Image (tube, rainbow, N blue to C red; front, side):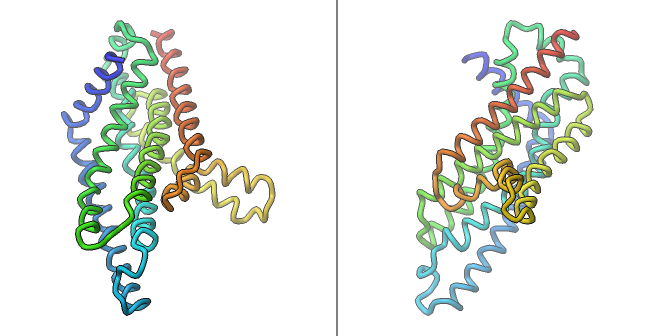
Amino acid sequence: MSNILAIAGKELRSYFASPIAYIVIGFFALVYGYFYWIMLAYFVQISGQMSPMGPQAININEHMIRPLLQNVTVVILFVMPMITMRAYAEEKRSGTIELLLTSPVTDLQIILGKFLGALALWAIMLLVTVIHIGMLFIYGSPEWKPLITAYLGLLLLGGCFISVGLFISSLTRNQIVAAMATFAVFLLFWVISWISSIAGGAWYGDAASFASIVDHFDDFAKGVLDTKHAIYYVSFIAFGLYLTAKSVDTERWRA
């Protein structure tokens, strides 16, 4: 466990040793702040139109926080490739991959360390949004339990994207190629749910809806902690890390 935490700490520090972390966090905070402002303005507008009793008469979780956090899933499409693109591609480009693979740590420890390092950066990005949410508690009274459930869903969703990004990064030494391929795969998992809307109840429509990574976030955004969605995300992460392990194992034999 100490080796995993050491690698995770090294990965997290490496993000902040380069402009990547600052660019990604800044971009995420800027876009999130824009969505926050838009949804807050919309909430204030419908509050005045729907009830003379003021905004407290309307559920702020349902009409503002939920659509706000659903918009965050769109931002993930763009920020996650920037986080994961360098995980293995940079190691290969700089030639340090041989040192890493011959070090006294297992492939599993390396993969979990890199995964936890990237996940920690994603958690830091989510912490930035606590400032915005905290303002809602100062001037309103949101329900905190659905909010925690929604953030848990975002953390698991980010973990799924990170596991896939690590696998793709392990396949190439070019960070740009890794980022573009990761974005393409993410986009596929995003739009696959559209098949269900035109399937007319066919079996492949249900299969597409189940495979869609963002559809499983809907219940989390509502504040509903359904074990089937949690199991899906954990299984997705495990499968992505398994593919990464196979790819790294192949690289070890080549080395």
